[in-house]
Length: 343
Length: 227
View (cartoon, rainbow over the protein chains, first blue to last red):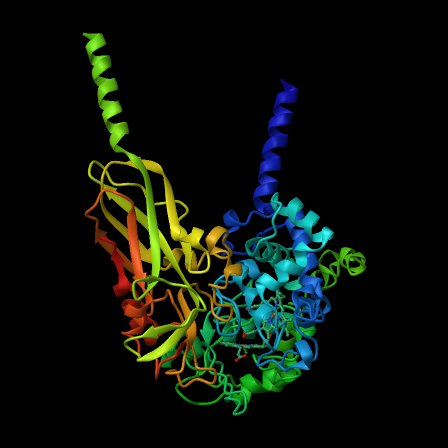
């Protein structure tokens, strides 16, 4: 009898821990909303995650085997492109935009600065086929992968199928990227009652809630909507953002609100990497916002932050740095790739 | 009494068996009533010029064939990629049986759900080059080729027709009555499309928008049931 009760308690405990813990290799932080990604059509399994990680770091995805996803999305930069305002791809070509950091992708509804991509699975098609990024085709990638014993084995282990298809390549890449969850910054520990803000961070948090949270909504620090934060148009790049996708005048100059997590690792900032430092960003919000009717309503009134406010606000932003995520060895270069380059 | 009932049941089901057959739908791709061959030089009466084709591929989805007694369930899988290069792709077989065929309905292109569901397999695998990389969405219909009437650098024309978001949702629902009781044969004569396009001026359509909407309607008008 006693054993039964214990067993029951144990079982319900197991189910409960699963519930808050997540599925397979993924855990869903308690203080996060429900994810957007449709896990039912791509159930997470550790073999597929491992395969996705290999693909992410393998330059085999580019035409001349020189560029991997990680070339522009480095783990030590929270998967952004370090020190590059505009991303740098194959044959030293310069891209048109700043490579965004990659994390918490399961919570995003659309991808790219202009939301051109509607699902994480199909995002990888863009860099693989872009002439300035990897200049390959999905069929070309598949042909190369099919020739490698290591990949034939890994695909079979992940998807239980003897053929390598485009669907599997894309789903594996998604699986790895879905495990990139950043939810262990000081902010998160405070939210879960495990730690406390300093006096200065608290003041910064207040300012943040007043001026920034409407777009950079906690706990993801983005509402993932398209907004105009008052940046002047770069006359060389002529990037109209969302407008070019929807062909609607009202969407012109709107860009997807980026998350503010891990900012210390992701400089430079904005869709074209125009600001090198957080101080530059602060100066923009304080006195650089254009006054025209394109600017989103949340930023129409001047913020009037004094020097102390700006320092406090930055102190709060630094509590969004998640070192555990950025230095997590599970997300870094996998050893398998090295041995593969030999065969 | 019981015996008679049993006999009746057997008789009726035998009757049904005899009249029913698996449903087969065939797409015949043509140029001026000839079977279309990629790479071959044709003479277009409407262009008064020669023309050749490199690619003709399109999606057909939600295929439903209606019979006299009942209508069939949608064909499975949900979407088929018809490819001029691959004759096998032009024949759609279904596993269920129907009595005489009265009509067929299908979608030219894939529905909006398929466009937002991430990576899919089978004919919907993005490796077939019918998915846009730079902006999510399937290409419903692709026609590429060459004619001197086309002023582009290599005299090449490229129509990649797609888009799933209103107001530029470009898949088209088609519905036909079928007179005969044999297999359903759907004809698509490319010359009938060329005659509706303005290839001298609009020879490259590569994304969703008004041009794609206009051309998708013209493409849809070309399908017809073979008598």
